[in-house]
Image 1 (cartoon, rainbow, N blue to C red):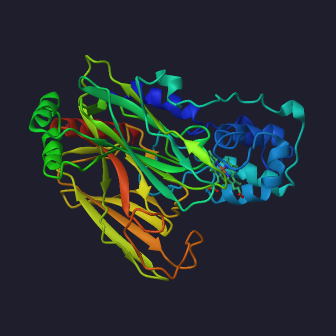
Image 2 (image 1 turned 30 degrees about the vertical axis):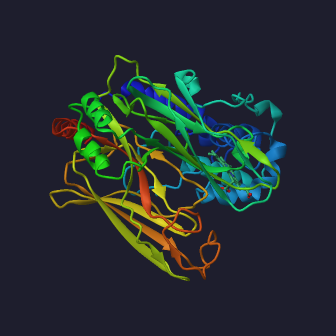
Length: 462
Ligand code: HEC
């Protein structure tokens, strides 16, 4: 697949969002133990600007700003703990297990972590203000992140406003919006966002599509997707389910923002489709109103992308039982009916979630760990987006196995009550055990070509 161009676009976006792998600041490398003492202004501020400010600045998502020395100083103990344990910046994927090439990798390098820790151990001195890098300019206001690279969205879908009282149990607010489309369109990017004020009460938001299911609408959709890998299998499966069933589209959560599909991949939306929103709101002590919006960017009308992205939960099941004071393991499988590229890896569990692993058993019997998170936390729903050149590609018949470990003991610091029996359910106090994945179905021919290209690349590298 020719992914170069889109990769650059995505890289630009994640850069804007401050989540791309960071080049080493020269100062971090030159300040060896014997060199001049590490200072905030020269050694640490550049790292924080690149890796923390996107969230830790006034009016952003994190609880405190980490822009100036005065703001940082009271937090250094906590910073040391969170940075050394790789909890911050949030990138909780196990290093050294499975694929490590992602376009939104925001983790710090060992050198950067070492710089921060040694600076704190040495008393966290401020240093000379002359060394302070110029302040980083951040876009302000209520806007879509993707606007920076794609311009304003072609369509903004607005959910009904919702007002959360100051005191309340968590609320799931559901609402449906008819889309004003008069002809089929392919979505190439989308982003969901709560309003600036609403961000305080918005925990996460899922969006679905409700597709028109009349025989005429199905026939029209088949015609638009004719020849596309996996299209018939996807449509047949949908038709076999009740027409009221929704199709997963996107999600917004702490750690998950907008989504640009790779080059030549899109999501077809037919006229008559409705968008369905479900937002999880929590009370923050005062009344807050949110109005969620979803921005869509379309492919030009004359362009039909070769592939479709299918947003699926894989490896899950509803038969979860987590007894009190117990650590459990659940496994679920998904058999791929068509050759498939995985666009991302996104673990999904709730408070008791501890670890998740994705493995593949290939038709020839080989078994491989694709990715793993051993320190999952429900506070973060991080979407690890593969570099398209390294995204896993599987032949038809591959079995994807998802193993989920839940820790319902007092040893799990996120556990609200180890005495509860926990079963599958929507609430955060219930559990889930699946991955939220974007699957890209490809043809047999594409599959063989990609495998060949990668073999050549590997032999060049050896
Ligand atoms: C993607 C957004 C994001 C990025 C990037 C990020 N943080 Fe955070 N950080 C948060 C949020 C949200 C919280 C509060 C929730 C939590 O603790 O996980 C937090 C919590 C923290 C805490 C704990 C505060 C406390 O209450 O003790 C520390 C310390 C911290 N961050 C430091 C950092 C540092 C240092 C960096 C950069 C090297 C960084 N963070 C990058 C969003 C972020």
